Length: 462
Image (cartoon, rainbow, N blue to C red; front, side, top):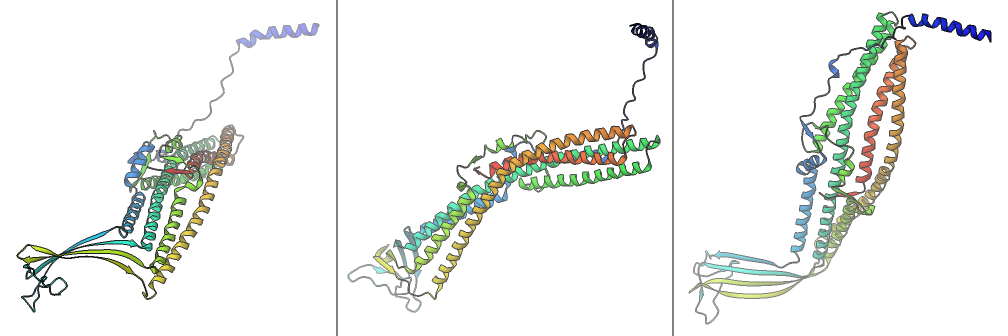
């Protein structure tokens, strides 16, 4: 008990003395280097920029050569269908001509050179020279080959229209990819400049430690080497940015660099694409598969059309002939109607060669359909799987970036107080740069994976 009282008295006696003493000096603030480098200046923005998905899609509709080619293919298919239908519809023709017999100037001759004589008892004589005209009408009655040709043309038209929809889908997917790639390149270029700034700050810190005698020349050289590595990454990143802008320009039909404005909402890109594309009810409804199936049908009917060339055809012809007379103006000379049965006998083997050629085309179309079906199944499975993979990679990249930032902070603080080496400082800085780049790229890959997963199973109709 007395010992406790003595201790209490000592504390009370010393308290005023401690209160009268000056407070402890504050801890020195960490060294804050000031860096200035021309390469830290951001890349100038592109002269042309897009600010929304609708604006970019409008440029594609207006300037895409692939879209124009697909539309021209539809136009060609429609023309082919009309040509095939014309064989089955009535064909009329009007011909007018003047004939004169040089050897017998007083005789009236027709267009074929045959003499034209007035019927007995007629008071109208053919004029010299003779002006005659014919009106002919031809109608196909039985022609199996022509019907097969019409069926082939119909399937080809369906294939062209489905191919147009597939081109629209691929253009939408390509535009979305180039937009994401351009934004990712912009972000990577920004991260590279941040990395260079940090490397310059570490170099200034190492130089300061060397000047104060706490570091060595090796520390300075090692950190400056890291600065040059950061410069190389920045230069490569800027070049990738220029190429991404050029690729976006080509996607939009512009032979120049095109950037993405800061107002562009990349996260809502999937929802924006739903305004122009709709999900498929079944994978078999994808336009490229429909185009391949229609092409197989067209090739099959084309082969059947060639085989039907061995069959006879039946047609109806009607011709009306009129000529000028004296007194005029003229009269109708003849009006005939005839049924024509045409039976092919021998054409030198050309028909057999045509059948073999069309059979080869049918086989090629069949194999193309099978290859397309396999590619689509793998593409869809890969797109579905890529979303889960991208989400997992984003989570791991986020954790890795947080750990790298914490490690770099602790390493820099340890180097400032003389407990860390320049090698650890360089390694932590490089690891932080790589972690930040990896996280940015993983986030953009996730957006791209979601776009791919939607557009690989969608139908786009502009």
